[in-house]
Each structure stands twice: as structure tokens, then as C-alpha cells.
Amino acid sequence: MKLTVIGTGYVGLVSGVCFALSGHHVICVDKDEEKIKKLKQMESPIYEPGIEELIELNLREERLSFSADLQDSVRHSDIIILAVGTPSLPNGEADLTYIEGAAAEIAKAMEGHKIIMTKSTVPVGTNEKISKILAKFTHHSFDIVSAPEFLREGSAIRDTLHPDRIVIGLDNPELEPTMRELHKGFTENVFVTDIRSAEMIKYASNAFLATKISFINEIANICEKVGADVTEVAQGMGMDQRIGSSFLQAGIGYGGSCFPKDTNALIQIAGNVDYEFKLLKSVVEVNKGQRFMIISKLHESLGSLRGSTIGIWGLAFKPNTDDVREAPAREIVEALVAEGATVKLYDPIAATNFRQQYDHPQLRWCNLPEEAAEGSDAVCLLTDWSLLKDIDLHQLAKSMRNGVLIDGRNVYSKEQIEGTGLVYHSVGRPQMGGLSGYSASVAGAV
Ligand code: UDX
Image 1 (cartoon, rainbow, N blue to C red):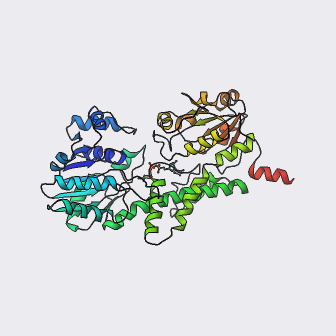
Image 2 (image 1 turned 180 degrees about the horizontal axis):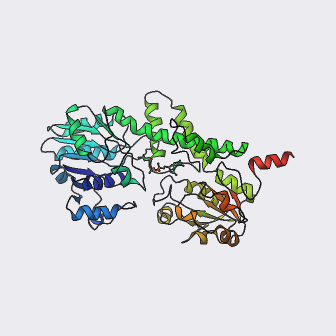
Image 3 (image 1 turned 120 degrees about the horizontal axis):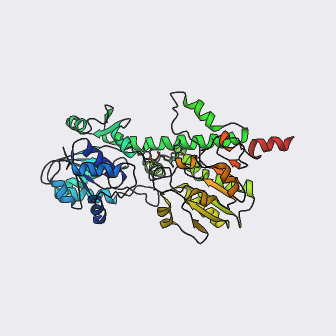
């Protein structure tokens, strides 16, 4: 099939590359000519393991091309995939400017029937709006399909090629065979529904996953006070298939380009129809507070942070990405600066992006995790990069001024910590190397 994908962000570029890999002819379009120029030279604008190799392969096999000319690309394609951004407006609502602009341009380019498939995350009812815009600017016939995307950064290619399910929302049943053909080879699990339900499935899925994270984070906070271990609790819960073991990793909360934006958008979608989504509001609230437990634990170990030096390991919102959007690290670092600490920052790939958003004379930029720890009073692990799991913790303790390690992602085991001399705090697990939480209150009572 001949496809045009509009937007070369995470969703657009990865979808385009994967559709090309499965044998379709794909044109990826972006109005940013610089991006297109780089893509033609096989340089990806996003960090995603494996993507440049697949771009190269598809270009070589002439199934993929890049263009800044939307109208020409639309004319040469049967299916147009909308994958432009839907950022948050100040009130949390999704900004549909790019969607609406692209729809108008598609319509103006049409010289015959087209299928327009929306992959961007859009509020319920948006595909109907797109339909109206198209009808306003063209007299040619078209069909609209909602095909929300569930890929995760860092494993985007695998998630796209082997998804748990593909959701297709349509109101013309005749389109179903074409949609199945388009996704052939990806998965047999194609769920076909109406357009509004498909739009809602995307928001409900992300909101539910965010709920799991905030839920386990609150359980973790209680575990600390009652002397239980949240990793054991999550494991025991997850063995119940009705609950499932994924997204029960306690930590400093979720970030990224989707969960914060989509949870707020769903609260707004509900609010627009006079429904207060109380549960989701709490999920967002819990997530906002969770990152600051890092600061509380620093106070617990060091008292005032004025004049202290704190090392930070990890700035990306999660490992295997250079994305720092809504990363908990930002507010944590800002709080440390406000409290008068010198902050030594390390991230294997996200430091440049972080620094473009936030810099301060109290920040020191480090090329190695050991450099961020050297002479520091405490190190805070904020992103669970796998390379951090193999750090020599004995050496680490020796190189620090005060050996406090705050592990915001529960990366290290008791065995790794024991005998290092580090004072170790994690999330929802008994403290090691000192007294706090439950153990401290028990000790105090004796
Ligand atoms: C998410 C959804 O998973 C994906 O389906 C959707 O299309 C886009 O949003 P992504 O933002 O790439 O994907 O990251 P994900 O791996 O889901 O993690 C999101 C955040 O939750 C990260 O900050 C991560 O650290 C945090 N998280 C995840 C936890 O704190 N605990 C967990 O158990 C899982």
C-alpha cells in the first residue's frame, strides 16, 4: 500500500519505518526541512535504539522516503497517517492546532478518495472534527480511521512491530479488510470498534497505567512506615493474573511525553461533560508529590542541604531515551538548587537536552557517574539506567564525602549494599546502613 505519514516525532517516524519494513511504500513528511534533510542522510531526530539501522535498510530497499512537501506526498498515497503532536494547553486540554492544520492541507491536496488514519492521541470527538475540516476543503470522498498508538520510548520499534493489540476505530465497516491488510504481520489481535471508543481506549489505557504507578507508590510510602518491602508486595500482587505484574515498580513517579499530558487531558475531557474524574486527579496529585520524597530522604540523612554537594544519576524520565520532558529530575534539581546545594549531574545521553531546558551556576556537568559522586555528600539515582547497576559501590562509598545513596528506582539489592558503608535509602523498602522509618520509630520506642 502507499502511505504518507505526517509528523516525524516518535509516533510518526517509528510507524513510518515499521510500515515500510512490513513492505508498504511510505513517505514520511515533516514541515521542518532541516529534520527532513537529516533523515535523508539517515540521521534520526529522536533517540531510539535501532531506528537509524532500519531507516538505512528501508531507504536502500526504496520503500521509505522523506519529504517536506505534504501536498505532493498526499497525492501519491492511498492512506494518510496523522502523527503530529498534540501538546498540552495551559489548562491541560490537548492543543489540536497541528491536527487541524494538517487536515486542511490534506484536503487541499486531494485529487481522489483517501483514507485518513489518526495515530496522534486526540480527545474523543476529534476525528469527527477532522472529518468536518476535510469536507470543508475538498469535494472528494474520504474515510476516517482512528488507530491510536501504544508504543513506549526506548522500545518503540519492538512495541510497534509486536504490539499486544492494534485498536482500529471506524464507522465504515467496509474499511476493516484494508486495515487488517495494512497491519498484516504485526499481530493477530486487531480490535475493531467505533471511532469514539478507539479515541477513549488510548486515554483510558494511559490513565490506567499511570494509576497503577501512583497506587504502588502510595503502597511504597505506607510500606516504609509499617516495615514492609514494596518490591515483595508488588511481586506477590502481580502473581494474580487479574492484577498483572507490570507497572508496579515503585519509584519517584512517572514522567515523559504521554502520561502527564494524557492524564491531564482526560481530566479535562471529563470536566467538559461535567464529570469530575476524582480518581485520576488523585493519581496526578500523588505523582507530583512522589518526586519530593528524594528531598525528604536527603534531609533525613544530612539535615540542611545548604552548602552540601549532591550527585544526580539520571536526568531522562526513564532509561534508553534522551527525553527529559516532564522528567521528575527537573523539579528535584531545582529544589536542591533552591536549598543552596551544589548539584553534580550525570546522564549517559540526556544531559544536553536537560541543560537546554535548565542550567544554573550551582550545577556541575559530569561525564561519568563516578565523577558526579566524587566528594559529594549524597548521590540520588533518578533514572534506572542499566549501567548504574554495575557501579562499584565500595569504591563509591570511599570517594564520597558522606556516603548517602538515595535510590529513587530501587535498583540495588541488599546484598550489593551490605558492607559498603553506604547509608542507603530506596522507595518502600527497609532502609539499609542506618536507621529510619519503621526501624527508627521502633528504636525510638525502646
Ligand atoms: C507510555 C505508554 O507506556 C505507552 O503505551 C504510550 O504510548 C506512551 O506513554 P512511555 O512514556 O514511553 O510510554 O514510557 P513508559 O515506559 O510507559 O514509562 C512512563 C513513566 O512511568 C516513566 O517515567 C517510568 O519511569 C514510569 N514507570 C513505569 C514507573 O515509575 N513504574 C513502573 O512500574 C512503570
